[in-house]
Image (cartoon, rainbow, N blue to C red; front, side, top):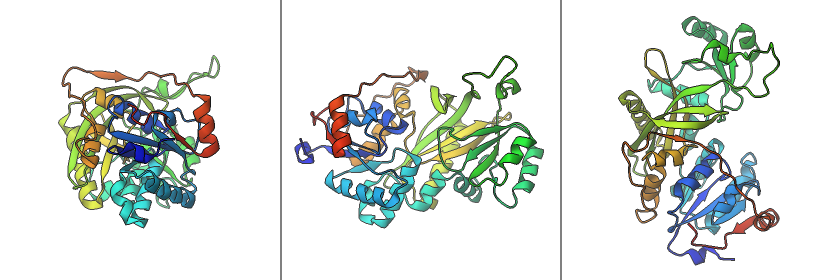
Length: 381
């Protein structure tokens, strides 16, 4: 099998949890311009198709097995001579931050900041507290298990009323999120550890929140999300904030189905304010992302923060915002890859469509049995 020595002159990029949405969209965004990049994918599962779109792949312990996972990461970063490690999930953001603090020599090769910054971007409770301390806008957020939760909920209901959102303090993709329509549903959430409550800003019509069961239970049903706003940016090694783009998404099952750019100075300024606070107060390095809802008065309220590439990275590149290319050129060198040309005004929206992928028996069997797979074409694009 070819070894890293056969790839002299190429930059080695390691993507954790490459089989998730972040890994998938990064590989798509880099398609056709990987000549100077050697991409190594990590996963705890051998059947992730994205592994075999990499130049090499490794099986690693799940992130929840903290000590084993970190030990394996240290080993692979050295063995693969990684130039940059990119987190593929929120939990990997925190894992890499912890690794960088425990082993400072590795920190320059990890796309993240310190652990206190990572917790702001991973735990919604910590993120809401950070926004409050920095006097940044953020949707009212209540810990359902806090002693003062009943008093604060009463104030929230007085100001916003139902519906409310109940969501896990950690996690993404809308997993575990509930829409609360009345006090009985709210009561069942009180006291539950790790549950946060927020007002449902810009709620859809009432009929969309409660399915009609007179004719039976719908086989498929979900609350529609047609107006989820977001703004992104990234912070370089030098601590300088690079503002990104603002956009609005239509979501299906927690994943975007349609994305369009938003040219709104208020949303862009909000992203810049958060970027400056993350860079100066917390020394964050790498991408940052705000998900926002807009109220009836036109004000934007962040509801979640993230510190990684998002599932729409490739879509934004198609819209003329090549965040992945710009960041990698900054971190690795301008010869790492070419930037996609900006196409202002040409593209109006991107629609997500599924893509079929074949898993070949031989590489799957090799990775499952040996824990490592090496592509047969080291120079693949």
